[in-house]
Amino acid sequence: MTKQANTPPATKRLPQQAPYLTLASAVEQEIPAIKGSRFIGFAAPVSSDEQALAFVEQIKSRYADARHWCWAYQLRQQQRTRFNDDGEPSGSAGKPILAPIVGRELLDCMVVVVRYFGGVKLGVGGLVRAYSQACNAVLDSATIIEITPKVTLTLRYSYADTAQVAAALASLHLVEENPVYADCVESTLQVVPDALQATITQLTNYTAGKADIRVQEA
Image (cartoon, rainbow, N blue to C red):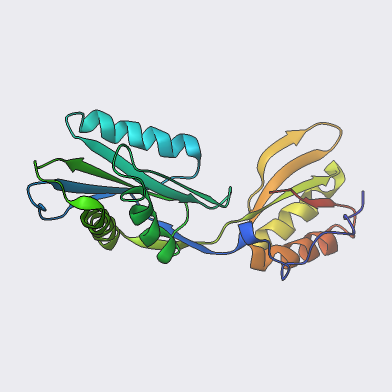
């Protein structure tokens, strides 16, 4: 077995591999009432549409007596944003919630703002300010973390090279995942992009080029 010749170098980082900012955990924050209306913000890390919509349903169930549950989120893997005014005038809620998420460059991040109507209409301008304020307040209370996504390598080698692979991985402080033992050993490795080329080089050197090392597609 030989190393795949077209394995990309570690310096050629894909957008999905770049470090990004997100939330450490879910948080909530209520701002002072505006003309009797309550605005409660909820922010959470989400990584898919399914997770995002499930979070909305969770908040709606918890605050079932509210008037509106407006939301917005931005996903990293899908590279897209979504928002919902949930019955408020068009452009008065979802976009003002989304703007701080995008402005702070937060990915895999969602904010839901619950509104209890206080009996006085705020107008479109007032709603824009209120939803923006609620979103900024809950994000201000959140812990922001930077994550560096890992690259998945598929490793295939003969049983005769087990000791050499083990030694290489020990020197790299890496652990094989999901090993499969058939006519050869096949497993995966999770590697930060900056260590990708060094990992490939080390495994290649220790096995005299006999290990098959492939970068999985994102």
